Image (cartoon, rainbow, N blue to C red; front, side):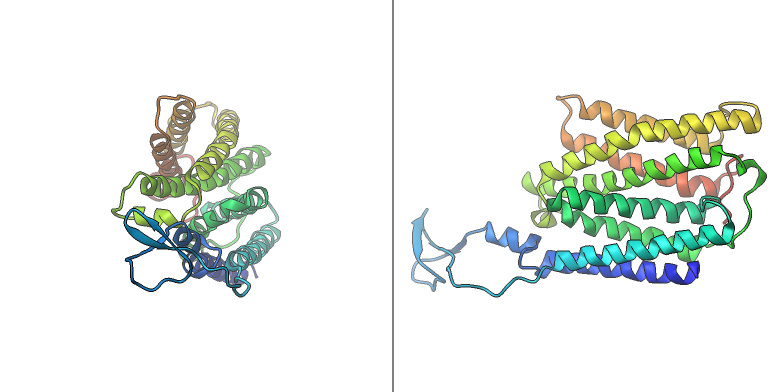
Length: 321
């Protein structure tokens, strides 16, 4: 059942992503519509106008008409609804996996990815309830969710089995649980940072690459503050997860720290995110610099999650792939 519902989960995330994209492009209250509304329609004198005209800088500016329009289609609401349905299916996937295993579903790489992505979705839905203007962040979040849950389904899927002896400890709940929570918060913070980089680049006049799409995104200051809040909350949780892992290592292996590949990359991630918070608190450091540090931080988290388990051997090699 867990495997079958995961297929539904991925499809619902895909539907949410496509609906978010449609809201960007075609929604009457979407990002494109708002961007177009901010740009006055300039026509040369003598051309046709849609309404009363005024003279500005040698051009005739057509003022918007006041004719009533049909009720706009709220595609953003449908996108959020699809995301809620995906979250429910995702929850069923994780819970049924846990029931079959008779334990918390964090015992291997497949289960950990499903847990992190579920928590990430729940965090984002909470953000939308609190700050509705960040609804367009959902396009980035659902894109990442489609990719990660798809990789979990196709590449990482592992048969249910008991925990390896080293993981059979109460520290399993404490350490892995806080690592999953902080990873989910970093995921949302990363998506907000990417959104900020594109929008702020557009505001600064950059038109290459993805920057032209910045006109369709939410206010740069809003998503930058959201990114900071996510990272400020996630960092102490990640710090606790690393410290709890060290205590568990002493109980399991007789030493607190041994520079195992997983420990090394966890420390690298900790350093990068500490640098992000330090830079964010320094007025002389530009916000774009701090956003790029956040992106680098998420890349180190991906290396810690995927690269270490796939390419290195160590005491933390429980990926099950």
